[in-house]
Image (cartoon, rainbow, N blue to C red):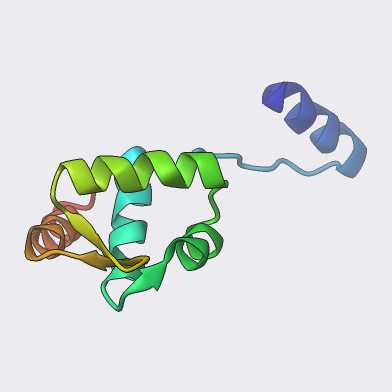
Length: 93
């Protein structure tokens, strides 16, 4: 469906558009970056541009991997999460 929408847009507007999906690592790093300064789930959802269900799955995965923790409704990036961010940035994942 996404490809069809792209083709229709290109036909009507006469310009090509580039639709790319974000990689899982990019989303995880974005969440960790926002949680560096403590963030509520709603803030993470808006800043990373995710829907509630997808955000919930990522937050659960990051908690399981001990990259993030939840304290009184605020998500905080752990030291392990900060190291993950640095490594991902360094090798440009």
